[in-house]
Each structure stands twice: as structure tokens, then as C-alpha cells.
Image 1 (cartoon, helix red, strand yellow):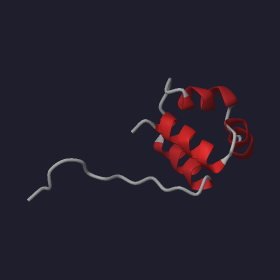
Image 2: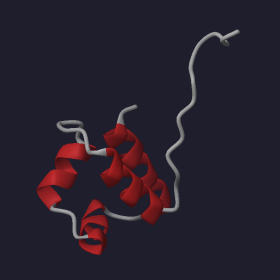
Image 3: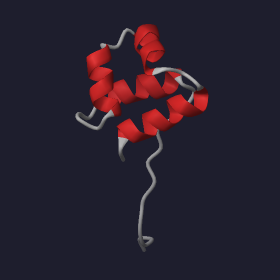
Image 4: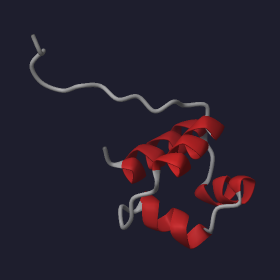
Length: 68
């Protein structure tokens, strides 16, 4: 999952700037920029906190054939 791309899409959909997100959640703007631009991957705890703030959940779905 490309977290940065997904976050960018959600921010656009919800009309929230990355700056505002950073300010509201006390996230370093440089770190947030690196995530949005795919230069670093955040921790699961970080993702959970950010997506929860935005009103989204993190789901894991299995790809491919079903197991028997």
C-alpha cells in the first residue's frame, strides 16, 4: 500500500491541507512531506492516528486466490 498516495487522495477529497493536518496533529511538516511524496514509510501507529483523525480506518484485505 502506498500510504503517501492514499493520504494525498484523502486530503484532497476531504479538502484538508497537509499543513493543517500537521498543525492539528503536531506532525513535523518535513516528515509529513516525505510520507506524502513516498520518500519514507510511517509506522502503523502513525498511520492509525492520522487516518482515525481523518475519519478513515485501515483495512487489510487478502489478495489472490482463496485458501482452502
